[in-house]
Length: 311
Image 1 (tube, rainbow, N blue to C red):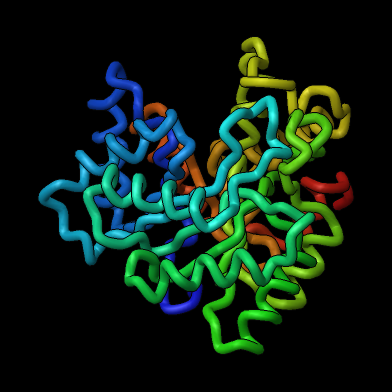
Image 2 (cartoon, rainbow, N blue to C red):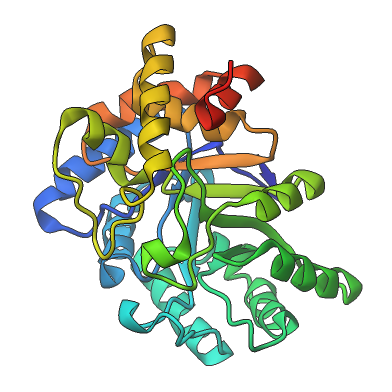
């Protein structure tokens, strides 16, 4: 995936599990395995594990060839998940997050820096101006928008291009075979892929990096009969359509002899938009199983079957 001056992997390792001392060894092993596969794109954020995620990644990266690794990080996340409407996108707040990220990651620059939420009460050009200051200072190579609507991204980029500034080069939103809504996730600032967003990404050929691709393990838990537990509200179980999609996913998995986690990766990567998929894993085996999906192209009929049940 080309994002501005960057070439990113379509299969991105979400390093959000880093930060727990009890699992550091396993997380480092997972990251080793990912890089050994030939990939180089790691996704973190200042808000993950209250900064510990970046600190652990910074420790991991010591001695590594920084130029061979793409680091994605994000700043501006609200201080409290109970008050997600209180955004932190002022230059002072974003600069604080960025400087702390650079220190934690033991790096002079971040390859792709996302503004981690939007504040629709302010014109997007204000945020573009701030982000471009970071670029001019050499602390950020490219900028992106995480949990911004397509319309707001379009407004921001129109301003950037008209004024000789760097535009957003990528977007991160919730995108999965499983469907949900901001109301169900319990976060009104949460942007979920829908028809309006999808059509814009397709028409603009704008890079979108999907998170929650595997729906927080929803499908796997459905078939293993394990309790479906999520932090916060239950995002996927309230919708009956997700259980119908689970059955169709199981059918296709058996027909193609491909593990369900891998099919979820391939679903996002096989859609007719410019997409990449973030995967987060707690074991090396999960990574190896899911990575198969990066090499599988689903047909339009298979995608339609998963989404609508038609053949």
